[in-house]
Each structure stands twice: as structure tokens, then as C-alpha cells.
Length: 337
Image (cartoon, rainbow, N blue to C red; front, side):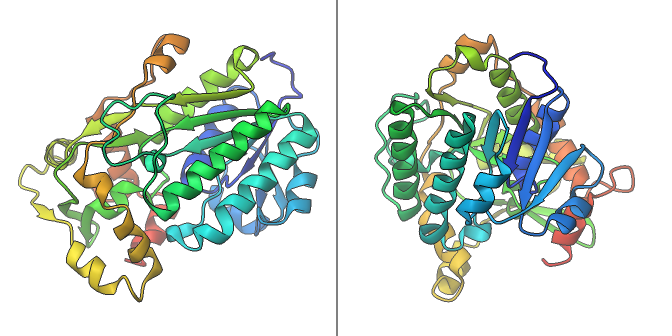
């Protein structure tokens, strides 16, 4: 894309994990950022001064608000997700439909972060972009339907980019995977959970956002419906635990079984636990992404060494001592645990 000052991106969900990092990556390349939030003043305060953002009051579930926010933009990043897996059935598809309609009206490309939920447990450790989508869970079938709608819209003139990745982690993202895979008390790291034995796909958010920014620099070369797979970090629980011990400088950190029995017992009463239990197979079967197409297009996949990425993430979570002050969002999350 050109370096015109009129490059405006609407980010829906800028306060979330992927949305925040996408904002930072695009702003560093000269994009003007507009962000839709239900509480624009609160979102501005939580985001801080990391990037100049034009905050717009509105709800991702309100088609008129999304349409109005997208006026004049060249890019719409839909990064909003229901917190804690709550009410996926009632929110995921309507929010995506609103973003798609708004992007189409503005003549903008829509970007959505895809997930591995679309694939069956036996899909394997190197899933290509063209692999069949045989989801077995409620959330997986919703994601499959979402991408079907995106593909259909692209056949009728819309422009869509799906960047698929594994479980997010990174600084300024306390509610992502390391937030529940680590045991923390009193501002210290006390242990690591092992949810399963299989290797698992993780995506370090600064690398994923950098990948997105590089793809968008070559937006003119993308197909109307484009999918790229981001391989990220591929690690078993024991390998991840070893890397966390090295990153934290705590070689004796215990690796403990994840409390699936407790999750199951409470799942009838806690929606988040019920939805988490449905996705347990992702930790028991090796389900990963092949990045040959991405590497062929960009020349490489941006990659931060795992220990470096973990040290940045754990430092932001406030568990590495005074040299790594926790972010405001991490501190707020820790107080609720």
C-alpha cells in the first residue's frame, strides 16, 4: 500500500489481545487508527498513550454503529470476541456480519484472526490453508460458518484476509494462554499447568501483529479472499515449562496437572468452564498450522525466540520482580484471581 496519510484502519476490539497489538503494529507504519468501543473513555484510559487512537463510542453488535465508524477507512480489523467464551452462539456471527457489511460499504478489506477450532482432532500438526474444515465442537462449527460467509462475500466483491494462529500470548494480554497456564501468588510465579501431553500451537502477539502489518503492506497482491497460517511456537507442556523456567530464572518451578476435574465439576454452573472443557481435545491431540504459504509470500515468518517472548510476557504479568513492572491490565487481572 502507499504511504498516504489517508490510510485509516478501523479496529473493532482494540482493547483486546490481538486488537491492541494490531493497533501498535499498524500505527508504527503510519496508519491512522480509529477504534470502536462500548466505553470509549474507559478504553482510552486503559490503552494509555501507546498509540494515537480516535476512539468512537459504539457496540460491535450494533450494525449502524459499526457502519458509521467505518466511514472512509481502508481497513477494518475485526478483533472483538466474547470474553470468557460467553454467548458465542449469540454474538460471534452477528458481530462478524456487522464488520463485513461495514467493510464492504467502505470498500475496505476486512481482517479477521482465524483459529484452529475449525479443524477436526485428527487434522494433524501441519494444517494447510486448503485443508478441510471438520469442526466437532459448537464453537468450531460457528467459526466454520463464519469463514463460509466471508468466502461467499468475497465471491461477490468483498475483500477479506484471514490470518489463522494458535493460542495467543504476549505482553498486555493477561487474559490469554499464559494467564491460565501459570500459577501465580503474591506477585511470584509458583508453578505451571500442563493441560495435556500433545504439542500445542501458540502465537506470540507482537510477531502475529508484525505478520499482519507486513501482509497489509502488500495488500494489492492479495486475493479477494486470502488465508494465511501463522505457525508460531509449537511446544509440548513440558517444553513450554522448561522455557518458562529458563525465562523466569526459576529452575525448580513445578509442572502440575491442569485441574480438569474441577473444571468439569463446575462446568454446569460456570459457562466459561463449560466452554473450556469443550476445547480440551486441543491439548490432547497435536493440531498445528503449516506456514509454507506465508513464508513463500513474505520470505519469513516473524519469530521472537521463545524464551525472549516468555520473559517479556511474564515481566508484563508482574512475576519477574521489580525490573519488570506489570502493565495496568495485568495488575487488574491479577487482583481478580
